[in-house]
Length: 544
Image (cartoon, rainbow, N blue to C red; front, side):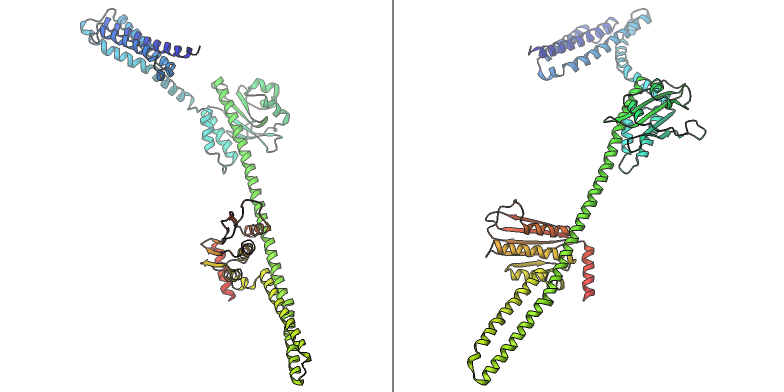
């Protein structure tokens, strides 16, 4: 059983060789019988025997066995051509009523060649001529694939669906020699089908000019089961579609159905004296309706996708604006607290320190004047209070600067980060960084400050470097330490999340890279439009 396919292939190849051998013998023997001198009969027999042997040997070649079926079909065609040549030469003898004489025998060879050429070209030329006549009489008719492919090229997202449907209707009417094409389409709710397009457009005097009532759900349910239907089906299920139509016209319809829903209805007409609709016409109409359903469904999905994308863009813009408002509000609150601390508590502490200094000086003057040393402990106590007040002032000043440093507002991002790096014992490197919008500078400053504080907390004594650079449209910052590092990829802490929120509010991003023993790098970038930089520079010049 396993060898049966191999035996079948060998038999096919042997039969192919046999057909070629019979063809050569038939044509050669006929030509020799008519007086042809070349080739001689032994040569013809040798060629036939060689073809038979080659067919037998080819059966043992795996590559040839795989193509045995195609080769057998080709050889059968060659044998048929040989049979036609033999019949043609026989007809020549019948027309002459005798065998060719010696003078005519020299023309037998060319006659055989001409007969072979004629037999080979007869089929293709006949089909081409029939197609040309059909095209001249009926017009060039494209297949449903070609028709819809031509329409699909113009069915882009920017092209209205009404224009696509009109193009389809006009192409069908022209290619299929139709008298009328109607397209009924969904109203968008799925409840009704309306006659949206008629080609050619009826004139006011045409009884079909008035738009018929739409097709409801019950009528659409009948169309789902219709397939390609004609007048007989319409008389039973949708008789009102026959009202006001010209009597005797040929009519066919096909619904465009997708997922059990009728998306459109294609209705075509021909004049009574035109060519009748054939099975091929109905199959082509069914294919057009099927493809039209796919086009309409894709258009609906595309429109829904565009609406969803627009909603997502709007939601993303709202979220970004909300984050910006939250960050701006937080920064404004920071500035207010900084001003309150500077103008309120800090000023009171400074005034208290001045008062303590004055009291201490007066007590020392009074003690030196009367020579009484009993008050020496009082200036010492006042000195201690003075030191405590000064420390409180320094702590409060650091706290105010940490909340929102005035240097960031007045001197810009570079000067504020330079002071922060000095305070955190970090190396500061910058290149080509100027002034930027206030929200951008605040976001970058507090992210770098958070990274410096993390380095001081988790990598004490390590070398820390803060880099700040800018190009045409991006501001970049990097904080690197040589500390012990950590396993990256876990749940981000509050500090990293705050940095991501701050930078994300101005459209930037931040990334933290670390590994045990390899230190930690916090890298971020913020897009800075060129016009905002120019506007900031102009504002800064105006402020000066």
